Length: 377
Image 1 (tube, rainbow, N blue to C red):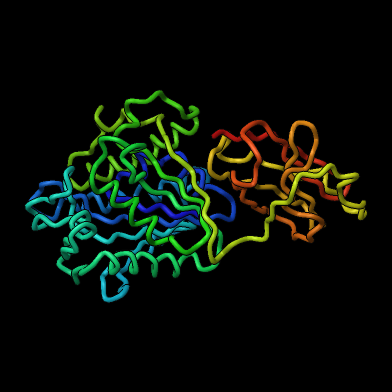
Image 2 (spheres, rainbow, N blue to C red):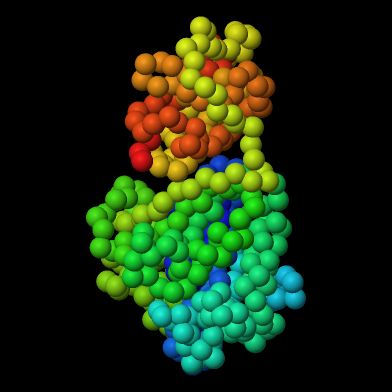
């Protein structure tokens, strides 16, 4: 399950679009989008930020329709109350989009006239309350905002394993970024502080200074969801944003990955290095020829990485990591019974003795699959 916590309605498309599209299109997956501000900029009325909100929702729908043709499914939109706060919710296929409608904090975090010069940064730093653009109940403290987001996550995620996507709040790795972007990163980290999750923290404005790093198909998906956003802005009589200052982000996506243990800690364990005699499953008469071990992502990695595999039928599973000499470094599964379908396992860089090349080995029945992974430090 994937959660995207962003400051502005177009942030996830521009800075996280490729990952978001992949998460939405993943079979059996679910994606939750939480947009914290209305992004009203310095526009005095409501039409601009309401247009951006509609465009945010349209982009989420586009991501859900990229690999599955649009059908008669109609988005369900309503307001819900969380800790007394009014939050707009839209459900569509395997996605849900929330809008908290906080005021835009401006680049420097001092706010805009339309929002009464309030901002998430002032809430975070000074404890100054912040009132949503629709005039609903104010957030009176940073904890008030964090607890609201946590309740949304609990409602949607429950006990499932989750990957969290947000802007990198550390200026050393994400220089020259918008204040609201950083605050969205702080919100994401605080709201998931006590749960096991894989967190991806993205570079914002500075990514345009960096080389294009997405594959053509990934960039095409990113462009498609931003185009849906822009076309919806136009349909609401607002500037589309389809201009060089925004389009230069297309094809670029930079993030750091962290893996943190917590209340949903899995059963994977690290063991001392040994040279095993034999490892593998016993033939059980079932056919596993379509067994698939997906390449871990990200790879190379310096924090954590996700391994996934597809089981064509139920069976006993052996999954381990070897060094290039064939010695076992990490034992993840040792004959545990698993059902047919897609399964995931986290890799934590701290389980490895050193940087370098390693081999992941998956065995089910008489079938064996391997893939290479690389640790960087």
